[in-house]
Image (cartoon, rainbow, N blue to C red; front, side):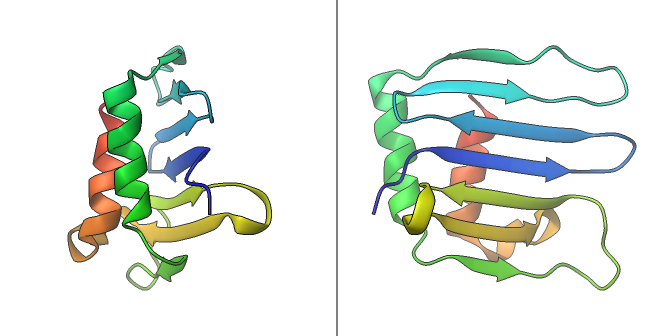
Length: 113
């Protein structure tokens, strides 16, 4: 089971969205648009950053969905680990991340890239 690539996407409210992608080489792209529209940024992770992300991804276990509160439309997120038939997909409401410490750790690590 491969833990790369990593893809994280959350759509908030008021035109906020965040997309983070890390490929198998450690190259990343962050697109954090909102009403002011930030330019996407990209780079390459350091070896320690790669090890950290891979360790966190390994701890996630099987794919799962964590439904948000009834009627929630903002801040719904999707994290995809791996690709193809072995990809694990996690769908969740960002407000519930405190209930999912393993997901929270990886999401927070991605958000500080």
